[in-house]
Length: 400
Image (cartoon, rainbow, N blue to C red; front, top):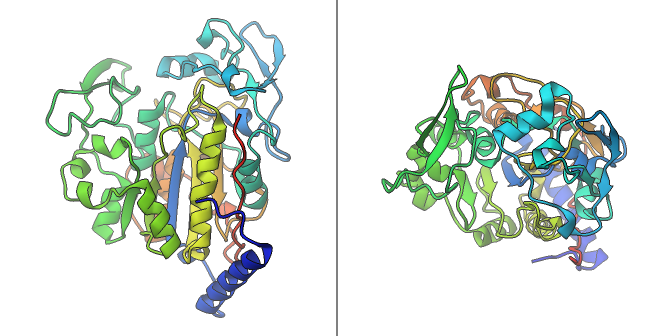
């Protein structure tokens, strides 16, 4: 699936023809957000901005961190993936690590160790850095919730978590919405009281908004996904019609058959969840993006690559506090598009709901909650008047 080995002559021809096609389609009319006809969202797992991009030139990163004693320690370069622990990323651990915005107790959530104070560089994740150099990188993209994957991914699909603050016992199986044994998750109310509820929810998602507006959407993937916890999706024809395989994404991308809105789930071993190496996940990303960039939809596409939660890893920037749920610690966001500003680093505050706001802005959809209503639509990272950027076809690299 990796096409990076094509000859320079062939690649130049592809790029030239793609550019000519989009210029011909646009003519002399000014381009705007309507130039985006395909949005692709990929959500990876459990990495902070300082962990991946703390050394990236021009970004607000750091190579040091503060621990609970007030001591300043260096962020340790990980020379081997096996050095990284699976750290606590629960609601309580996130609040403890953040320490009211002091960002100095990441050691306490792992029994006083410095396992959270680690960092990679551009040689470790060269293709993510290449995307950042050539497209846009956000260094003020925060998680929506003080906590782990499920509540943050619910925000990424619905601009709320329904009060959920943990992953429950069986995240993603959707057995509750199937009418089977109840899968329980923890929710918190406005007074801070916690209770357990069945993981089947009735609030609307962006997919519901798109469906009502007649805008096409699909979730490609082979594993469990957060839509299985949404009753209106799980128990509707969409569950059988709008959830093709990951392999189908590659086919649709290469043939120009992508819907207007795509969520792409990651393969097993490609989600970059610690303590796994980021290398297989980065290679997977390169392969699917190469497939997309080879296809005819590249010139009308934006790809957002985000990480769902902080994974217990250190980040030094205190998140703004919008409400009871967040924002949580900072994570990376890559914005890859012909219309992304080349080499741009956005310092605008974004969160998972900002991706919804972009799509809502593009299609004139009403916000789902106060979160996406207030979120930035991320248009500062785009220049629709610039000549469309050509594909950036990259090579996968050998994993240790």
